[in-house]
Each structure stands twice: as structure tokens, then as C-alpha cells.
Length: 201
Image (cartoon, rainbow, N blue to C red; front, side):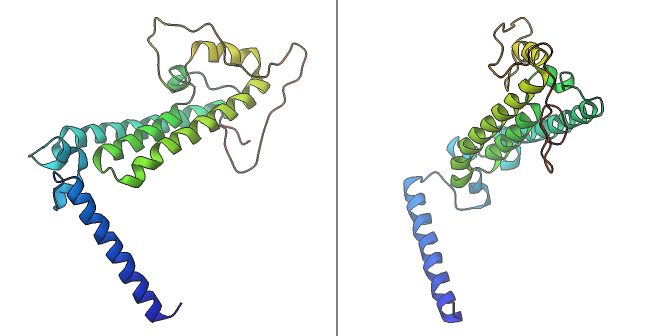
């Protein structure tokens, strides 16, 4: 593409962005055309104080910090599980079966609370769907390897949302079972790590 064509293309893109900006401004007159206006939730709730100290922004810090902590704690437990060739069931894994994915989702929620944009709001449910699919795929692999041990763990531990201590599920996650006398078949793929055992898969 020539230099002149690039300039023309940039002009068209800039005009398109301006036209969309004017349209959004006309549709949402509460949005401020200042730095503070980048905080969508503050504008919609008419927050007049420091945007970085609003309830939404502070809640975002909590969600992001908790997410990073959860990921770190989960990976520490996964490393221990990999060393002992066992299923991770303690630490964060005593609360939910996929704490590291919960951590990633909390971080995304934190950023959405602080700086939501149209693309990130659209992509968030897509990413949630992808994480759930990945988790289900990993669970099928682990069920093949750990059999009844996995069934017992899955029956008492929810996938993503911690349940009240007094509530126990008696229905195990459906998955392939390992019958007695059947040898375990570890599932490994170079270059990736299993989110439930910490080993390469």
C-alpha cells in the first residue's frame, strides 16, 4: 500500500471513529468527555468524587488482587501435586475444582468494573464459555486417570462457585470411570500443564 493510500485510509478510520463517538455521545448524554468520563459505571451512577475512589473502582482492585492471589495459590498447590503424582484437592482446590480459572475471571471482572469498553463487555461471556469448555475437557481426562478418587472429589467440590460448607452434593460429575484392576492412563501433551494435576499433558 502506498503512503498516500495509507493516509487516506487513516483519515477514513479517524472520521469513522469520530462519527461513532458523536453517536455514542448523543445516545448516552451522561457520559463525560473528560478523563473521568472513561469510567462508565461512575457516569451511569452519577458519581461526582474521584473516579479512582468510587465503589466500582475499589471493588475492581479487590477482584483483581483476589484473582492474582487465587492463581498463585492454585499453581503452588498444582506444583506440589505434580511432584507427588496426585490429584490436587487441598488449598484452593478444596473450595472449587478450577480455582485458577476463577482467578482469571475475577481479574477480568475487576477490569470491567474499572474500565469497561464495548469490546471487553462483548468478549467477557465468550471467554467465560471458553474457560468452561476447557475445564470440562480437562475433567474428562482426569476422570479417566483417577477414577473413583475423582468421582468422590467432584461430588463434594463444585466446579467454579464455592458452596456453603453445610451443603454437599451427592451426584458426581459424569465422566469415564476406571474399573478395578484397570491401569491408569496418564494423559500428557508436551508444552501445556493440566489445571487439576499440574503435570504436562
